[in-house]
Length: 171
Image 1 (cartoon, rainbow, N blue to C red):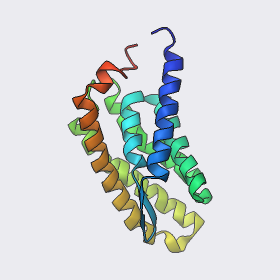
Image 2: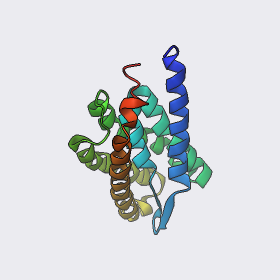
Image 3: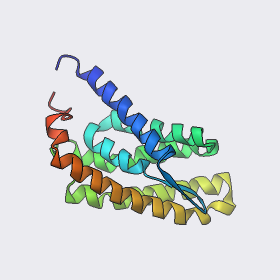
Image 4: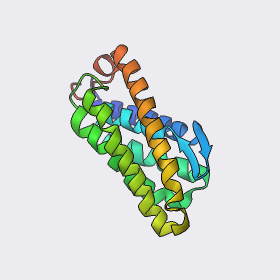
């Protein structure tokens, strides 16, 4: 492939848009806001792209969803938290031909904890009354995103998507 940087930019833009859609439009309202599955796409994106590309897609895709949803006060927390939840997947799965491994499945746990903790800290700053109330919604979101990630990763692995089409580290 002649222009790998352009290819990575296009794939990053596509995955950023998918993260936005999964966050903004594929959601379930709960008492403390809404539960979305954008985090599942963050895990998938980090496993596929690695490094700065995944951090960009995670942070921008989810921050744009906050903006579109009217949760503007959460954008700074989202930018930081979503980049951080991508980190374990970037580090462990960059060179693997598979997206779903025992380690990536297990990394949904610390990633979920980062989400819960990140938004708990944000709530302490934005409005303390919601700090404890929002924990429930964030835990449910983390669990749902882990399940969706495992399903999507297994499907992508079955089609050898990363190896055959998106193995960006070897192109």
